[in-house]
Image (cartoon, rainbow, N blue to C red; front, side):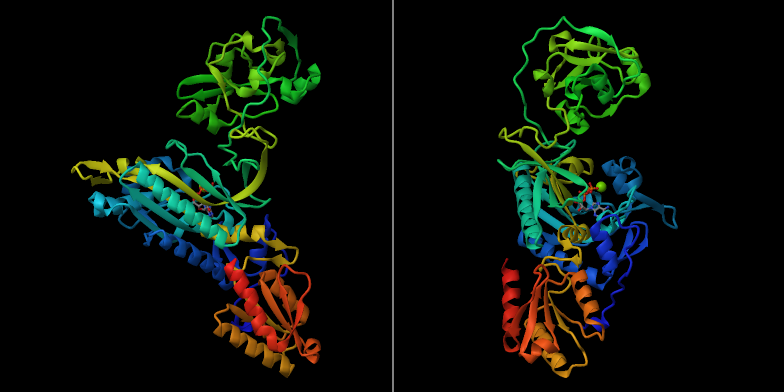
Length: 569
Ligand code: ATP
Ligand code: MG
């Protein structure tokens, strides 16, 4: 491709709306263009990256015998009513009516349509297992679209769905997809981690998020360097710390803490550490009002609370419910004398002489022991953080940030039961298919790659997904020998199947170098008059500071060495 012919609407100024590097660079380098909030056009350079990611995705999916299809993005309401999600999905689901007043939606995901397809076409256990996938446009009316294509409203997703006859089969499909995802993100040249994620109502161990490691990521990953345990913050477990306290109770006293409500205020006033306080949080649940106790410097993780104690829903209680349950106002709840079920975090096991709320305005209780109130039990209920004990090996947990680029999930029979997707087993009995679903944000993967690979001059994309692999850059386009060498190298590289761009523009060298760095082309060959006087040209990788000068006769061979090394990585 000739640079002069490329449609690259770059931006000179930094776009104001861009909060993260990838968004800023994608706009500046002419990868994407905003149409309206959370809705973008992919321009030629960006689309080249996107297509390269897609190609890798297709190869790996096909490698696991998944078959590509393409489903519609406009879907009838009826299917969503059948699955129960028409009412559950909320405002992210964009709904509208056609000329016949039929209700439709723009697909945020495709479980309904795929389940409908498979239930109609698959009859017998002989036709299973089946994995189908597509690369297709999704629409989710996100509350706060941001970071460009990283969290947009319209975006491109690869979604795959597996159908098996039983749990074991479903687990095999799941592992095949896990494997494919590991290959995909590895081949894209990304540093990533597969982390355990919440499985919600399905339960079990079969949900992983694939996270690209980047400081700007929205998600927190808790992991253990020693044993490899990794989970997202929502799910991350914490091991027990500290020896259990054996102090007996009965020696507490009530003290006045006028106007002191927040943990730090109470701790400072009583001259103790925040960790010496116990917070009593009142939750409304499907089993009525309950209290949850955590150390003052920790937070309750509502997802763990819900899963651990098998609640259908948990929600912080409002002021009225708190007053009704405790007799005191918000901010002064405590466990002593409460007659609602109390659940304590494991930290309380080792705490002694702690401070709790007095269930009365401006009153706290000091010198409290575990004996002084009754709990249903001690559980792992708090939000994990760096420095906590690893739940698997007892090592120390660390926290890193990541961008979720993929999510694999065992669905079980949730949709097949709701929508009656059954097959005949060998005994001739109807059984629901066991399903899995597997998503990759293709556009988000491009953005995450930039987030992870850039410097002050622009993108530094991995070879496998960069818009071009090599740029041939003649410094002075009116110098005949430069142009001749550049032209023949360019043609030779194309003939060798190397994705090459020739910067044939009559621009200042500084402008050309800047653009090449901004776009993040992994390998640059600079052909200048000065070098040619010695019969040499310069080869530079995007991540090296200095070029390597090579004899012009060897340049093709040397470039091919780089290319082949990058391809075999
Ligand atoms: P998130 O928690 O980031 O909202 P999600 O759990 O809603 O993601 P899934 O429904 O599992 O995402 O979708 C599969 C993949 O699609 C995600 O892993 C992500 O890479 C991508 N994705 C989801 N929402 C968006 C979006 N608004 N913009 C771009 N990509 C998205
Ligand atoms: Mg989402």
